[in-house]
Length: 538
Ligand code: ADP
Ligand code: MG
Image 1 (cartoon, helix red, strand yellow):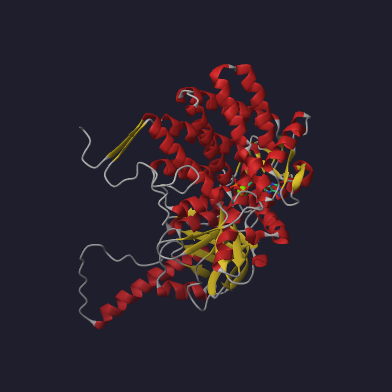
Image 2 (image 1 turned 45 degrees about the vertical axis):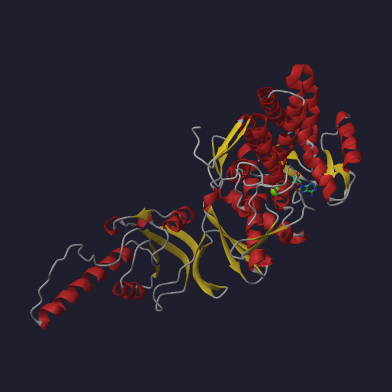
C-alpha cells in the first residue's frame, strides 16, 4: 500500500461514473435558470448573506462546491465568463448533457477514448457549421447590437421591459465608444468600461458617463467644485516634502532658524504648485498625497484637485481625457494635459464623487448603476456585465447567430448528417453530441410550459425543411422564427460555450482513477445523477 491510511480510491468505470454524476448534478443545479423565463436562485452563504440571481456563473461561484469534478464544471463557467461574459449557463448545461450521453455510451461498452475523439470532431464540425449559419455585424449596426445587448440581459428579472432596452442602449454606447479598430480588427478592453454601483434612486436613473467617475472628494473646501472645459493633469508624484527615510537630525537652535526652516518648506510646496499651474492645468488628479499647504496654494490658483487616486483610475482618466500620467513634476507640460468638458463634484447616494465627463472621444467610460435595493443594483450589474460581454463578443468576431435554441437545432441536424458519413463507433459519439445540444431548446421549451417532445419533433422537421431560425419564442410560449422575433446572440459566445463544454467533458472522461486524501470527497455523498450529491452546498 503506497497510499496513506484513510485515503479513498475509485478506479476505472466507477471513477468515470462518479465524476459524470457529479458533473451532471452541477449542470442540473443551474439548468432551471436558462432563458428569459428561467427561475432565480437564492443563495445563502454561511455568514447569512443572501444573493438572488439568475446568473449561472454567480450561482456556481456561490455554491462552494467540493468535489473535483464539480470544481471542473465551475471552472468552465469561469472561463466562459472571462472570455465572453455571457452564455455560462448554456456552457454548463451542455457539458452536463454531454456527460450524461457519455455515460450511456460507456454502458454500451463504447470506449472512453472513442467517445472523446467523437466529441472532439463533433465540436470542431459544430463550430464550422456555426460560422456557416452566422451573419455579419459591425460597430455601426446599432440596432443589431441593441438587440444583442437586450437578449444577453434577458433573464435577469431586474431588467424587464423598457428598462432592458434602456440599459441595452447604454451598454452599446459604452462598448462602441471604447472599441478600437485596427486593420479591421476590433478590440474592446472591458476594463475601460467601469461599472459604479450606487444603491438608491431607481434603475431608470442608471447613466453612461463619457469619462470617469472617481470615488473621491475635492481635497480643499476653497477649491472649485465644478469646472467646465477642464484641463487635466495626472500626476504620479507627491505634492509633499519628502521626509527623509533615515534618522536624520536637524538641529534648530533658535526661533529664527525654525521660521526659516518652515518658510523653506512652504516655498518648496508653493513652487510645486506653481509648476502645476504653469502647465495650464485647472484640474489635478494626484496618485499620491497633497500636503495641506500645497492644497491651500492650489485652491488659491483655482485648481480643482484630488489626491490618492487609484492607479487603475489614473489609467482610466488617461484614456478618457487624453492626458499623460507624469511621474516627475518637473516634466509636466501643456502637452501632457487632458481635456474634459465638465469636472464636477456631485453627491451620489450621500457620497461625494468626482465626475469627469463630456470628454472628447473618450476611450474609457463609466456606467453608473442605480437601483432601489442592494439586490437590484447587484443583479443589475450582472446584467450589464453580461450585455457588455455579448456586445464585445459580437463586435470582436463580427458575427451573430439566432438564439432561442434555433442554432443548437441547426447544429444538431448537421451533426447527425455528419455522423452518418463518419460511421463506426465514433458515429455514436457524434450523434450523442448532436442530441446533447438539443438540451438547450428542450430546456427553453420546458421553461415556457411547452411539451418538449412534441416541440423538438416539430423543430427538427422545420430545420430539415430549411428554416434555420426555427426555435422557441419563449416569451410567447411557442415555436417561432427567432430571427423575426429578434433573438440574436454573438457567434463568439456560442463558440466558446461549445469549446468549453466539450473540453471539460473530455477532461472528466479521461479520468479513470480518483485518489482522494483523507477527508476529501472522492464519491458524491448520497445522491446520484440529478441529485445534489457531492456538492457541498453550505
Ligand atoms: P446563459 O448564461 O447561457 O447566457 P441565459 O439565461 O442568458 O443563459 O439564457 C440564454 C438562452 O436563452 C439562449 O439560448 C438564448 O438564445 C435564449 N433566449 C434569450 N432570450 C430569449 C427570447 N426572448 N426568446 C427565446 N430565447 C431566448
Ligand atoms: Mg445570457
